[in-house]
Length: 479
Image 1 (cartoon, rainbow, N blue to C red):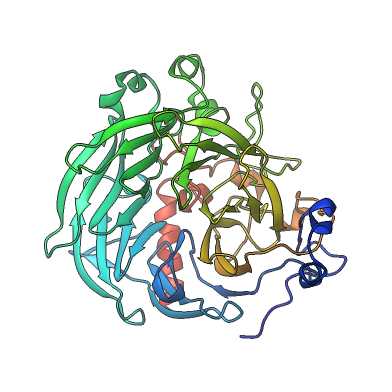
Image 2: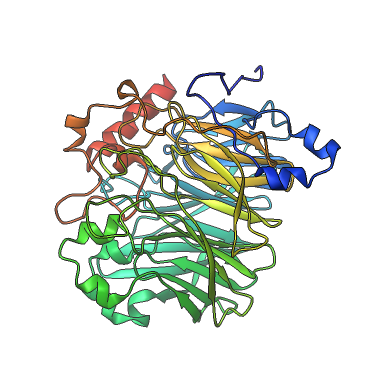
């Protein structure tokens, strides 16, 4: 595969933004000359159904691919190579699909699903464990069936952390996946900790994700905020502290639950800490709802957690803006997933592209690089392959109003030259049928069809139709 020319002169395909002129002036002449090329991707490889991507050992990327997963060798970022694709996963005669998240540690890979509640009656609910010591031939080594969908999970050593969400429960569940048999070790419940959140629609208190570092788990629970837990004792996790951008009292006053689920303040969607565990970033995924301010896409907030018992807000990174920022008909610009490494924040913003920020001073985060191609990409996540050298970002097809194709991109972890941004509002020919889209959002009247902040299959097509879309996609791959 030849390297593609991603940035086109005078067009709308690509964008690179870099250090301000004052910062550039402080560099040596040699350093400045190194940054004369426009900032652009190094390479890309198509992956149908791409969603979350994580990085493992030996510069391998693992990509959740809706109907399965792919393993990609990114050791040569100009030529990322798919080593294997697993497209049909069946357990006890039932398909494991709607796979939007996976997690890897060493030679152990966990693939979980379905990510959504919609149309799950004939699906396997749970996760499968793989041995990926030979990434070209992953071997299934066990599975565990749950009674709930799994939107996200995190693997650390022998322990797997899984989010459970149902109408009457929002829990973190901890499993031992190190032995021949997979066993449940313990759990923590938001609603046991703060029963008042039972008054809020279950999508407004959704435990969306989990990140674990040095015996602490970080749990973004949508409008309930992000909880920091001590998980050194798997059987008895305990709350250390909590950050939030709204309150239970404020959420109780919202008349339409959709305003709380889709709009700011709140919407804690993803959380992660830096290498030292003293800086916490919380991404708040939100859209414009036409309600009271703030009424715009959600960004990323930065907290000093050097004392985890007393987090202190230090700074924020705002989302890029565009003309139509609504959930159903707009251009998605909100923060999604990201990674903190070496004083840098690598982030994905759907059709607003990918960004790199210097967060060594979290009170004044500085954007170093930015690239977007809203005609062809909508980025799900950004993960570091080699600090200071390369990061990856997965582009997903599952965004309303688009006809995107899934892919994995590689990027340089450095700044490029300054450029003026083109409009982020795409031309009409990039969009789908907006009239049809009015009846194919990701929530039903009572919110039973999808999970809060879900940006995968059910965000593209609603309810049981999602399953048919999945089957068609899988059929196309097999054909």
